[in-house]
Length: 621
Image 1 (cartoon, rainbow, N blue to C red):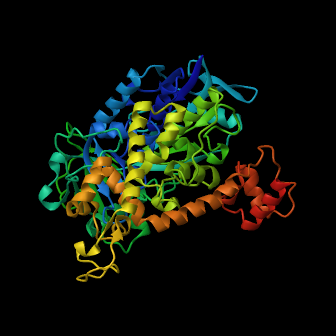
Image 2 (image 1 turned 30 degrees about the vertical axis):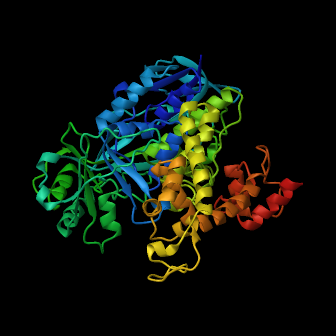
């Protein structure tokens, strides 16, 4: 008998089992291939827009993804540096093989985890609650809670041209059969989605004189708050090129053999990341599309062709690749392909990721209709945390939309109609000014400490940072300088002498003032600052908080307003059919999603403000 059984060892399964084990649970991790733990089946990278914020939140809550990429990254970049701090997003290329090896070693070293190389084909239940998992042999392994992290394995079908064959994640991996049907028998509703991957090429066959180099940042920023320095031997470069009109013409010759256009693919693909043939079909006015060449590691010649996801026949793929500048003599190591797989509509899970139909059964990752390593890892982490907390008879962790990107992700899953693979964007987070990558430790570290995934020594570092920010802000409010030191007047115009000195806080709100400049210009201020801290991260927080101060105050007011709706719980047994005054669409959507709060109900598409008002009155009574 295990406390927690995790099925699947992708990015969701790894975080789920590690979080549970670190909280003292006896855990079993079941995977079909122990050599493929945390495999990067698509692009060899972690982070990016919104995804970088999620990765840092995973780290703040005690997850492993950020540490893994810091240890195995080969190039680090901060995206959107020309924009405001809320849009800054860390991204890193990974050594694909080393990343998987690192995660396996961490799991094998972690106490409380057993490993089995096998497949889960069914769930054993009794009286509406999970009792364990069923293996192909018929063997039942007992568990108090089960977390399914099945990725794209459920009845997976791979397409290359008009050929298709069963596959789980890559061409070499078998799918999982039987589990979907078992869950359907238990009452779950399922759908079909599609994703894809581009061809891999031999890096030695690229003409680098014809492509644009994209080096890493000269001062790379680690992902994990606990990483003091990156052990980079050297950063590798990525490269950029473009498709041409000749490329598009070659690709069009394969449309009559495309599984996408001939109807062989039934699943819905991601709108935000279409295949290259879909981009050409949907945007015929575009003469070219960017292509990014991304190395897959230091010890391999394999290169990922980002922006060229395709399921066209292999001969068309190779011809089209060789029409791209720099790839005229390219050698293709592996073709691109599309993969269809089963998922379960996430209105069937609670915001703890426990299913509504079967108690103590949790879904995490692509089984919920999401896309991306980071989104999967975040769900796995929260599923592991909440399954462990329930086993310990403790209150679950529910992150609302104002607390974390992870909160936005999970809230979107349980309230929105997922009809295509879900991906997180900064535009999805209405509180993104507060939910920055740089303050994830401050926002979430205390939660990690309380539940047991963050140890006291790690949180002491966060406490030191919080105290330093508080003291330094008081100093900046009190200390005054004459703006004419910078050639500025009190009004901000140049070459005028100000009559009255201004507080450091007021001066720092100006866009052209850098904190380090003040330290250089005022010895007294520098000495007093260094008595508090010399941490540049603290200086950064002070400047961001001051420049965003007005927006942050407005964001707090909006959060408080929304919180009032979240405080109104809706009983699980509540019947919407008996409530007069609800619109027909609102009644239908509410009965399907079964929201847990009025706030959740208000975010369900099709539920009108008048429906929310009716619910408030009814729940109030």
